[in-house]
Length: 397
Image: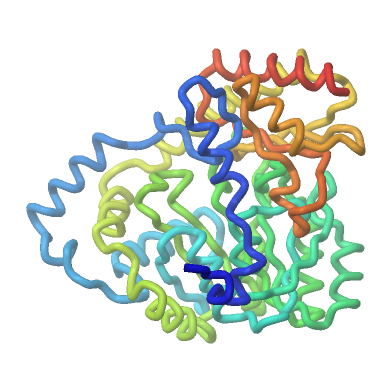
């Protein structure tokens, strides 16, 4: 059957994630993959989760296996809010929280509630491909704002807001940004908030990596600086606990929470109750901060090792970020070099990375940048893979 005339307009322009496609190649056992965005498997608290599952099924099987409420499992909501208030000064008396099925659903709900067809979304350039595709499925118009070393270019941001009154949302990953690894300065965060207030737009602050800081000083979240209810904060358990449980949360003003709840009911009724109970028990009975600290040390080591190898093997014409946390490094080659073509050659040599165009508002335009991930590969593979990649770069540049 020919389905071309049946596909909805909102899906016609959305392409499969380049990262997911690369995974098909990168998943081969002989390929050294710097393409993923996965947390280190060593960070998963497997023994604790096994214990928790047994306890839940022994003591509260009906609650775990029955339908739940759309807003989320009440004990988990309380624990997360308390933790965010303590660690990030997030959650005023005007805020509420909803537990969602991963950060991707948090972004999807935000788009569903706020965006009409043709509404504008300002994104960092580059930005996370998953959320860019989410906004595309709602037929939003994407406006990219370039990233400086300290975050989004505020002059371009203001010009974009002036020129495009259809903008309704600013999407930002201000801490250890995906894909660049850049952390926005306090001045940039204050500037984004000031402009959002001035032009009456909402902000979606995506912060899955914030607790993975292994150097430098913490910077206040946008949500903690917000006094007008314009920041929607998206947090996640994927990088600090387990991505497979598909748990994230939105903290936002009570005035719009009802629409998010209704939107979630129309999508999946509620987030997996069993997963929520596992996370709640872990927060109550185990030391998640100690577990996260171990992840930070692991990522510190792997990041510094990868940067050291890049310093040794990469041509001087290739520059790259030096993140203070998170799991990504962003490399920039001279203008005119197509990272998409380079990626194909790298895969032939059994090394994978993600070309930069995947993270741009215009995915069809060639990019001279690429993203590297250091969280999952062993020391040996990091050293070998970067040497191979450095040799390829030297040959082509």
